Length: 84
Image (cartoon, rainbow, N blue to C red; front, side, top):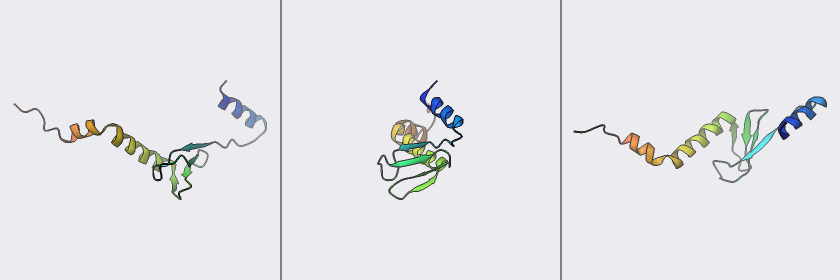
């Protein structure tokens, strides 16, 4: 059993609600201070930004695609088709 599975079992046996937080890099201030509250489906950072988890995902996903796939993106955008 994984560590998370063990923690879940302990909480279940003691009738305690499991509260999990994850710390990630904030897309606004770029520091590792953004906390994701899985139970509430929200996030907040010490820089003052906060919101819903799906909004954070969309921001981080767009940053990832922009930073890691710029060449592919511009190839698709500037594709004029096959010319003979």
